[in-house]
Amino acid sequence: MPHFVIDCSAHVISVKDPEEILREVHDTAESTGLFAKGDIKVRINPFTLYRVANTKDDFIHVFGHIMGGRTTEQKAELSRRIVSKLKDMFPAVPVISMNVSDFDKATYCNRKMI
Image 1 (cartoon, rainbow, N blue to C red):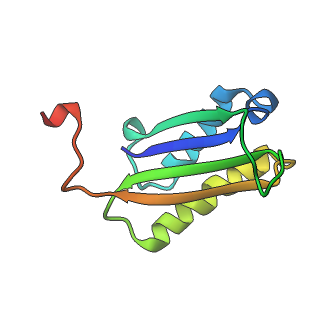
Image 2: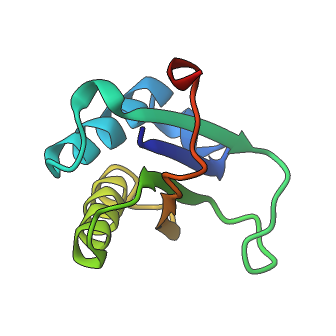
Image 3: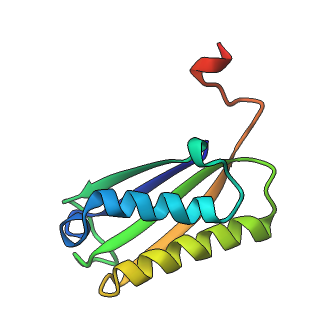
């Protein structure tokens, strides 16, 4: 926990090494002080089939899934930092966005809990 899932146009991972993208999102999330380094998980889903406002423009969207308990301000700052980092990395990508959703602690389960 947390999970950061990056959906993007496939072209994005040809512009930068996917490992660099994963590392930068991980390090930016860690820099917020909201998560332990060993808990942060980051994945990339590149898409070849997509539409963005009825175009084939490149895009990046990060879905942040975190355990509840952070303030709205903390979640907004997390989004701002990650979007800012991606904007610096990909100045030509016109659509870069992120949202943060809380896991419901009561319904969350992982293998260590079984």
